[in-house]
Image (cartoon, rainbow, N blue to C red; front, top):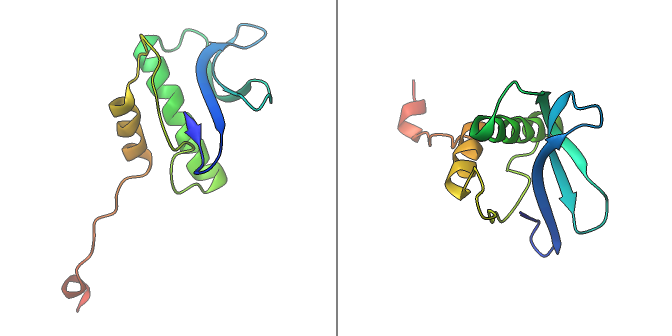
Length: 112
């Protein structure tokens, strides 16, 4: 994932455990050397495989929307790695769940 127009920050997303092994965590790493940052987590073993990825990415996006009032996902470009459980279409489907396109309202519909 790349962040921001004109930015050269490359962000890597992975799932791993916390230090105590109690949580499955969605981690964000940056080539800017900030270290890994937890984005979302769920009790270890609650979800597995694709459901784990989908759930944690959804929680991350929803947290961005509600906690930071983001009006778009926190990335500009998505490139999956080999054998990724989510591809670009899967991630876009999560984006559309969190930030659904609002239906355009015709002026005639507003008249009383």
